[in-house]
Image 1 (cartoon, rainbow, N blue to C red):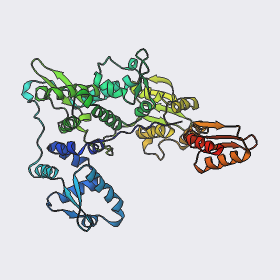
Image 2 (image 1 turned 120 degrees about the vertical axis):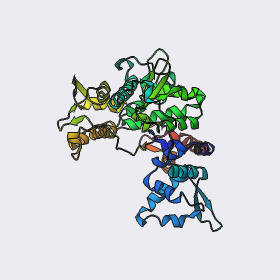
Image 3 (image 1 turned 180 degrees about the vertical axis):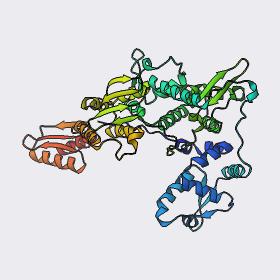
Image 4 (image 1 turned 180 degrees about the horizontal axis):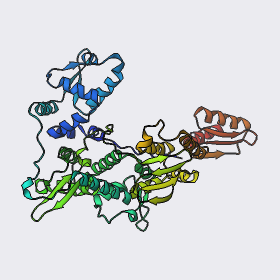
Length: 453
């Protein structure tokens, strides 16, 4: 069964994929430089800080001395990422030895930040304005509710807890790779990538959506570099503070409304003014995906008898569990189900793999079992892999069938030719039947044509 793999790139990957001209323009923004720095791997961050006040090129040999011998592989990865981000420029001298130097614009902005301290993108509205702001707990609950409602629309709009007017730009993001629709009469359906997307953790899901949102920005008349710049500025706002919408441009106001659908910000309307309040989803945007400190508490317990207990009242959790298990009943704060052969076969047919299901169960293991090794019983994970392998015993390969060869010699020559080019799938010497891969068909056809001459 062919597998579709959904990859969620983080902030660093998206910035690195921008054209050089756009990258240089981004580095004129001090917030971008700060976000780049704090999102770097530890070793890359160390190199930037060591080179920050050095205004002459540094040789590659000198930088290699900054790490121990067993760290050379990490050293090469860090240097490669810095070059990819254009934070580090590489030049070759007459002896073909590489030298490195920090991007001057990036270097100057980071120097200013370290020496003079950071400045907020915009000041929050004064507390004297009489604003009724939600508490941090209420804001977190709002963000979770919006995000789960957004995902429920992906599974089934009828399952959403309330009617949400998701903007057309955000629905376009969902349509790309996650939903497919044959015609206007049929409702959109989840693709294989969509099923896999639902099993990702929240950080990975968020970055996938943000990446797609940025990817189709040009279709909406937005510049991707400006969009990334604003998203990262947003990550430097204070969680729970109110910011006047009048401080935003028209394009930024459109973006803010889209981000409210995701739960990244909460919009509020006063008598005279409107404001937005960033949630943790927004202020954590520039944190690398490798940072797991903000991972939420798990809720799933899997027993050795394949019974599953999920301590959650979330409709989204229930719908996700239905993707690979049989949900038997749901109480106000408990979902009870079982992992069965039939439920897993349905998941496999939808493009979900056993490893993705196991990973989901491990990442969302209840604290009572999360510290166990393994957190999911081995007999359950082994059986899931075995059931998956049952479906993969027969592999479908496009092929062409040849028969009625003029002679035994021509048949054997054709078999040898197919074997040499790696296209032979099956042969029957008695009946002179031959099956070759579809990609080898043109070469086989040309070979047989030459044999007739």
